[in-house]
Length: 496
Image (cartoon, rainbow, N blue to C red):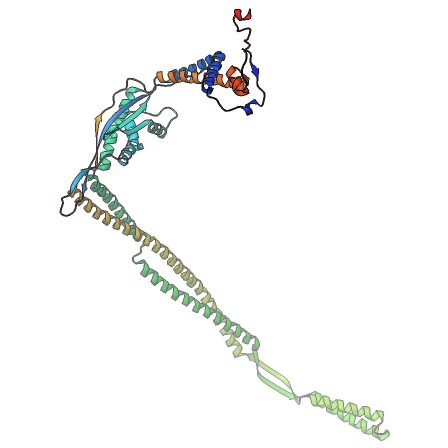
């Protein structure tokens, strides 16, 4: 049959599907598959061979399963006063299943089971990584309609998987009994009491050793006494320094007085008449004679008379300035006041030196007291901390002792476990592996057929030619009047 090429925009002008669309689609599908049968066969063989190779090369895994019966304890149902109370059986709920599954999958249970079996990590793998992989391979699920838990482990070797899951179940039962046992509460408190007693005695011993090492009896009283001593010492030091400053001021004043006091004073003096006065008197007498003679020759206002009068006035002025007697012989002696002042200076200097020498020990004593006060304060903090720790340990010991008594009374009144587990079926080495060859081969077969047919349909769908009379009538809405067959596929009779 000849093919007709569609227009590029023909896909946008397609009419709605007619009643014969399913038949046309099936015919198109088979046409595409048979037309591209080589492609379909090649893809099918490729996918099937890949699936078969993977199935053959992947390691076999074996699943071993144990079954554990979980019996939930009885619960007391309270009733009104006129009716008796009765106990009911608690069904296996998801919370109980989740709790048991967590115990089975716990790292401690898996590590103990691995140690018992003797499994060691592979080269380059730590114990933690191996436990994490085992947790992924471990499955805990309840059996439908029963109180049975199925513990399954997926391993590479059947014998080791069965042995490991059986050991894991035994370890789980032991841990479960220890976790739910009520009689362990009293023993727990007893163990805690033993630990707390040793801690309390250790704290008290540390407190006593610290007090003995620091030689402190009553730290608050000692701090009070030291503070009082420190205040007295600081007051004495201030008074002593005031004394030093007073002595220094006194020394300064005495030195000033010593500087103003002469070291020697006159003892005896001998005076005689002043010869200068007699000379001036003789000179004055001569000037008077000369003045008298000048007045005999000149007038009183003459220059010669006035000059003589001026000389007479000058001599009289000098004569008035001169003393009647002058010191002839003088005897001096050492000043007693000066000597006393010097003695006072030396005494004050010695006192100042002594006060300064005494200042250093007093200042060092104040510093030592301050240091002792700071050390005692630090020791008080340490002692208070040690006392607080000892009191807390003693309080915790007393509290746990009361809790132990309460647990002992409670266990005496009630000795019943809430959840009990019992192994009802142990695992045996599995016969068939978990990942056999049948399923991968079937999946490879189906995947090869689906992928090959899909590729054929996709390749044919990309070809936009009209292949059948129904497609021509559907898309062009024109009747088909005749069909011209392809000459290389038509029979010989049709060609003739």
